[in-house]
Structures are given as structure tokens and as C-alpha cells.
Image (tube, rainbow, N blue to C red; front, top):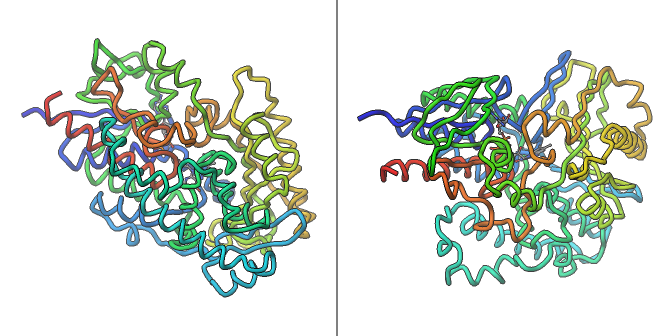
Length: 495
Ligand SMILES: Cc1cc2nc3c(=O)[nH]c(=O)nc-3n(C[C@H](O)[C@H](O)[C@H](O)COP(=O)(O)OP(=O)(O)OC[C@H]3O[C@@H](n4cnc5c(N)ncnc54)[C@H](O)[C@@H]3O)c2cc1C
């Protein structure tokens, strides 16, 4: 019997994972990637001995990675040289006070009690809730493949309405546990990973601070790109073929099916096409316009970020691996980013110093720093001046670092590379430069997120952050596995 063929558009985490599963089942799989290397948003940059992870910097939800590597027949712990980052983050508040989020419960208790007496008990109760949310949400919302509406809307799911609090707002729910706004911020800022404001995110997302404290935040020696290297070696071992610098121009469709793709004006045929490129981009740019792209355009998109990558001629040892400056005007920050698509007046921001975890990330006696400032995504009318916003964001980073006594960062910059939403769009074809794709509000979660299978072209599939289950590296691996299973089942039925 003729071997079935699959074309994958994009070598992001979802694409690599799906391609490997499909090849392992005997399909002939070719991945076409527009960039020169795999990984998509999980990308890297090296210059003069300085190494930067330009996308993800936090390896969170390790149990998901473990399960997904096992599903690929590999061991996550053996393939990656992992170290636990503890404290995970050093939080710095506007009043100069700090909080190190650590799994050392005694130290955490001392710090919390100093901020708000009695709050440690609140944390323990919050972790209890986070534990419940994590396990129920991964089991019932992240792992399942909702093929038909009744897979999602079923009686046994009804208890989830109170078990994982999807209808409560995350920030409002914090009043059950803490009074001090600094603590409410310390255990909700993780919602930004979903591109969401804690003032609108479902309280379900308490699962994120829970998993960070309980299962840890990790760092692979050599940086996050090591995850891509590991997935690439599994893909190549399984026989997946790759073409880089290959920007797919069109999905070639006919009636109710996809025949293949158009690349450099040539038609390439396949039994199935799997798009890992951002789903709204595929609808807008690679498919015939039938109104679906416009519908998707009206959906909510996650925020974006301005990122700075600095090679420095001296080490800034006082900076721990992950520092988060959390602004007092926490609510205003999210309103500015999400409603006004702007840069907040006093933005919360994040600094990553990878050389604290792996000295080889910077030349000896020097340093490598990444600054990330969340901003709104690109607006329809294109009125945002990204050059000016980037320059303001940079000044905010310098200002915040001065509060830690770092007054001379600017003078020690050997080079800077920066990304704005325009860069995210150009580099990875992310619609609106939105770093996390379609956002994860209640009406865009679970079954409500776009499906793995195109509703009209039944052999066209999707995987990645804007489809199910949603953003994040381990979730992209889940997405790749579920999409590959859908393809295998459909091909097996001869459809
Ligand atoms: C700044 C930032 C920080 C993040 N931090 C974290 C973190 O700390 N931890 C975490 O777990 N997650 C984090 N994420 C999220 C995580 O990176 C993503 O959710 C995940 O990598 C998305 O994978 P994906 O499968 O959707 O593929 P993508 O990364 O979207 O890759 C899709 C690929 O398709 C390619 N492509 C697009 N169009 C075409 C075309 N026409 N032809 C050929 N190829 C095409 C693109 O070049 C790209 O390589 C972060 C993301 C960003 C941007």
C-alpha cells in the first residue's frame, strides 16, 4: 500500500511534535519552515559569545513535558540537563520591598508574614485550590480531544463549574486568601503567560502559581532552545524531512479538501496538510477568503511584548535569574495593555539573567541580559509608534534597575537587539504581533478554541498556540500529539 504523506507548515513546538508522532506511525512527513531553523517562537540568538533565548525563558509544567516526551518514546529528564530554579522569581514592588518565591516554605512563610500577618495560611489554602485546579484542568480541559460538542458539554463536566471556578475572576478570587495587593499580584501575574489580565482571567489559572511552586520552574543547561534541539533529534530519528527557508505561499484546496501546498509557485501534494503556523494567519493568508478570516479577526488576541537582548561588558551578579518588577497600579497596567493596546505609564516588567543559571551564556567576566516589557498587540489602524514605545520601554527598564542600585547598565551595553510586535509578526507570522496568539478568556477556551480540523477542508489540520489547548511550550506538545492522532484516525478511516 502507498505510504500516506503529510505536509507540515512550520517547525514550531507543535509542528515538530506532531511530525514526529506521524513519522513514527509510518507516514511520510515533510516540514516546511519559513525560517532558517526550527523552534518558531522558541528561538535563540547568539552574538559575540552571548546567548539569548528570544522567546520562552521559563520551563514550567514539567509534568506535561515528561508525559509528552514519554509519548514520543523518550525521556525528558535524560535528554535535557535540567536544574531547578529556586527561588523561581525575585519580585520587586514599587515601594522597594521584595519577595522571593521559593519552595523553601519556612523562608516563604517569613517573607509573607512580614508583608501581611496570617497570609501564609492564606497561601496554603490558595495552593490547595491551585492543586485542585491544576489536576482537574489538565485532565478535563488540556488533555482531551473535544471532537464533538458532546465531548465537552457533558453532565460529568457540570461539577467543574464550581470545582475549577471558570466563572470567577482570578484577581477577585484572591480576596479569599490575601488582603495585601502585593500578594494578590504575586500570585496572579502568571496570567500574562496566557496573554490575559488577572482581572478577566478565570480563577482556574491559580493552577499556574501552584505548579510553579509545587513542580518547580526549571532551566535546561544551554537554555530553552535545548528543548527544540531535543525535539529535532527525535523528529530526525523518526525520519521526518525538513526544508528550511521555505515560506509556504498557499494551502492548495479543491472543493472540500486540501491537495497540498504551493511553494515557490510549485504545487506539492500530500494526503493531509497540518498547519503549525499561527491559525489566524493561515486563514488570512494561506486559504481562500470565505469570511472565516474576518470572524477570527474579531476574536480576542493576547498581548505582545517589547524585548531587549543586551550583551554587557561586565557581570551584574546582583541580578538573580528571574526578576519581576510588579507595579502598584496593577489594574491600570492591564487596562493599558489589553484595552488601550498601549505601554502602561509604569509598566510591570521582567529581567532574565541566564548566566546566573549557566555561566556559558555569557563570555567570562561579562553578562547577558534579557528585558521583557508587556505591551498591547498591534491595533487595526496601525497608529502605534513602535519605535517610540520601544524607547520608552527601555527607559522604564533602566529606571526599574536603578531601584536595585544598578545605575550603570546603559554604559556597559556592548550591543542591543530588540523585538517589538512588528518583529513578532515578521519573524513568525503572528497575527497582530500577538506573542501568545488567540487569547485564553472563557469564551476562547477548551471546545470554544478553534479545532484541530478545518470545518470545510477535512484533511487540513492545525496545531499550536492559537488552537487547542492553547499557548505554552508543553501545551504546544500536547496540541501536536492530539492533532497527529486526529490525522491518523481520519486517514485510517480513508477520509
Ligand atoms: C516572548 C515570549 C515568551 C514566552 N515565554 C514562554 C515561557 O516562558 N514558557 C512557555 O512555556 N511558553 C512561553 N511562550 C509561549 C511559547 O513560546 C509558544 O506558546 C509556543 O512555542 C508556540 O508553539 P507553536 O507550536 O504554536 O509554534 P510557533 O512558535 O508559532 O511556530 C510556528 C512556525 O511556523 C512558521 N511559519 C509561519 N508561517 C509560515 C509559512 N507560511 N511557511 C512556513 N512556515 C511558516 C514560523 O516561522 C514558526 O517557526 C512565550 C512566547 C513568547 C513569544
